[in-house]
Image 1 (cartoon, rainbow, N blue to C red):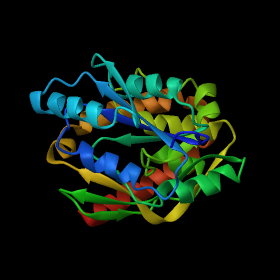
Image 2: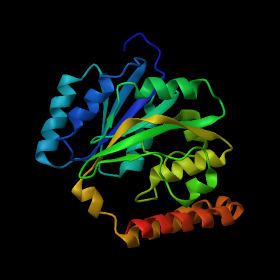
Image 3: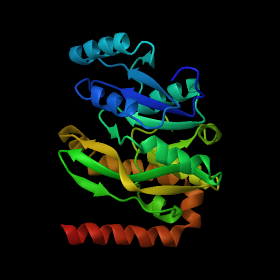
Length: 253
């Protein structure tokens, strides 16, 4: 990757998931697209095995990955710090237990680079681990986005627009990626979906249990308050999509 113009910066956040990080990194270095850099942020990992793995990675990839260490401050601050140092005009955030398909960067980059009206590009994605499911995010539709998020965290977006909206919201304890997609879209930009499963999202037992209904509702209220103008403008359409979401869940149950 040396002597090549960096087009995409992959930001990997790392916190006590040393058993998965090799898969995430391998998926990056297997990309068919070459003009990227990797910045790995250790967000205050404190488990012995994860720290040993981090030390191993720093030795193995000392010339291939930029490493940042910080006290545990949360994923939003970790991402923002790394993006500030990023050289790429496009950003791809990757959690340390997830994976990219080999042609993920190539296909999303081609679309985003050739369409200045897009803020980000996402894709269909496959869950794995505790749950296997194909998720097909909706095409550009702001009211539907306001009603609920299906856009995965590793969607690639423009760094200059990230700067315009002041990055990930560090006050939120969750849904930071959803908030970012809303803010970028409210600037007047659109998104596009690659209709192939190019991202793999790991479902862990802990991740399934950690967010209670009470916490999710609290975060939803914060999202609504932070974007109240958009919710008011699209009020009836958002209500319509909420009803559809509730009915769909009710029918499944």
